[in-house]
Image 1 (tube, helix red, strand yellow):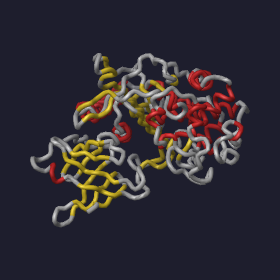
Image 2 (cartoon, one colour; image 1 turned 180 degrees about the horizontal axis):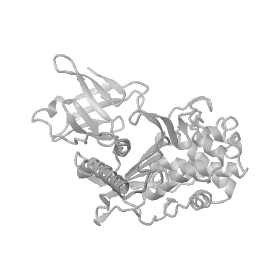
Image 3 (cartoon, one colour; image 1 turned 30 degrees about the vertical axis):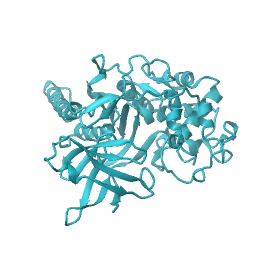
Image 4 (cartoon, rainbow, N blue to C red; image 1 turned 90 degrees about the vertical axis):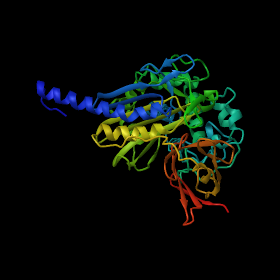
Length: 443
């Protein structure tokens, strides 16, 4: 960075910024060209906009392009806003983090032991509404915080509150939304406008309570290896508190600046939100990032038709926002790599979808058994060759198309996890690796 405002120094700074911008754009474009990303990438450093560019179409049927004013559903990143609303009520002395939730949800088992802090830190032990067998039906009807919390009422806890983090607790943030309504006497969407969006100056951010959202992108899902289809429509009210925020990339970047450098929250509330003693909570992951090599605050989200990522590097005062209207977790990989490029590090361009040699597809078949720690407990995944690509069939019948990345190496197009095949000396598949997990071949 230039420390002296001379013409030569400014020229060097502008040239360096232009190079970073060109490198980021060059990195992102293969994702756009292969229909694995459509949205906005934004980078800020030291209160200065380093990069912002929109890609792809907000509405493919109308040919409307994404732009700075386009709003995206940000899925689990919404939890940051719900957490901030609760902390604002704490700052107003209307709530206590150590208050139990029995007064708001007496039918929840363990309500006299679960604290608001447990909900915020996703250590409540509540059963996950997203895992209920009728969850798809829940998404097809208008919901309220009360109806969502009622879905898990009287169901047993998964573990003793406050003892551990098991997985993202969608139900905890449904209950936090209910508490916001109870304490303010307002519908959640209105309460969020009053408590969070307006004070933070987020004029392009709102809660989707099943009413039309202006300038909102339409969501799409991957189809096959190189196409898209309209994502299934859902009632976003069914994700109240945990995934119902719709916003722009610029508002999301402003949100990060407000949380880190503003006075929306008291010092004690800000410390609670960004306390690294626990690496998850308040809508953030807070841990050393292996891809970047330094501590980071980050969060990603995925909901039908959309995927999102935000990261803040405190040592660099660097913010990266990646919002997409394609249901693909490529946004997380893009976000990590864009941060590295912005820091002047070399990132290899993505080689997406190298064609498979004729006759090789037939070698990718089999059934692979995963353990109890897998995303779906003790799941068996079916590796299945098709006419042009290989796919994985999950226990509930959903299919992941695999993008070839080389011999026996793939990327799951939906979840953007690396997939690889292990073979014995005869060439027979003995295991399938999915991200960090290994599933043994079933003979």
